[in-house]
Length: 208
View 1: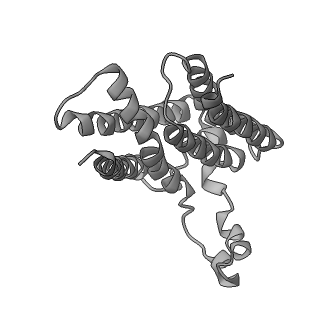
View 2: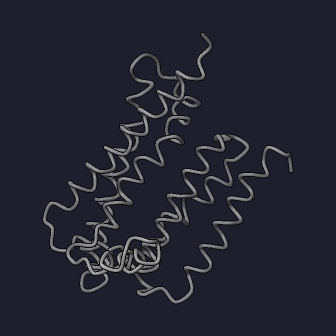
């Protein structure tokens, strides 16, 4: 193993350990399996194509964080992640965990998807498409937006196919008829913010 490959390998090992821990006794096993389809496809694809398309350590770190957030949602189901109960232990005060209302963990992860997948999408566009001008910045955002739409369509089709409690748990709308649109909007907002951050970072590295 080359020295430069050690960091991604450590991230992979850390994710494997976290995945294994969260795979033990998830709240809804069937929903956990559905949520992990994306992991069963994405992680092997990243490993298989590592030599062909080596992302930066920043991109791998962002993907790692997103996948960990996703696994937490898969373990509890997104609509039941007990993040409010965790707040007092994080120093947010005893009253913080008493908040009620919609569980926004899924919205947080959709925003995180746009923000954390954007660096890899940007590097993928640079390596495979060589866009020019404004398309350097637009194509990665469109890439994230298109995948957000596809994911919402998959959720809808899965909910229709399985129905019942499993379909409801996987869809996770929590009674909001505009849930899909809000999720896609948050993913887009995250991607735009990620693009702004990469643009600023690129300008700082540009020789004067």
